[in-house]
Length: 152
Image (cartoon, rainbow, N blue to C red):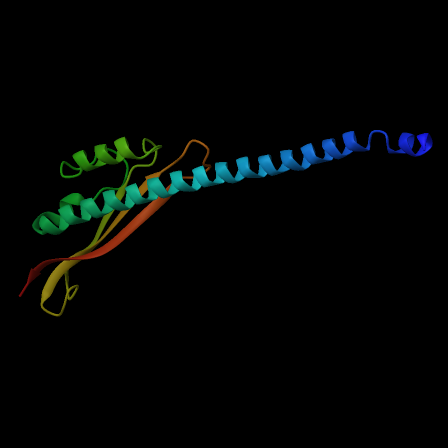
């Protein structure tokens, strides 16, 4: 009987160590999932903020359609006067915008038929960029809309 007990000695300790190992792996998996969830929520927050900012500018352009070409901005240099406050708002709300300024492109500003055969308007594309500290490249959100400037 003593021989049988000696063969079983240390089994409980081994089982406890294996249980701790399995528990530790589970905790590490939960911590990894939490980090991924936080990263996803942060990305979602900035993407929705970029969508809001682009929509805000598009609304401003729609209400100021007679001056549509004054909103054009290539993303470098000083923004036009109509965009100065909006670009400052983008810089305040999104990270990494110092090197990644928004771009506003206005095309076909006098073309006929954008909104119908007897109307004039333009296509406006707004691109908002941001870059998180751990990103290798800037992320972006683009909004493309047709703006009718006059109907005849």
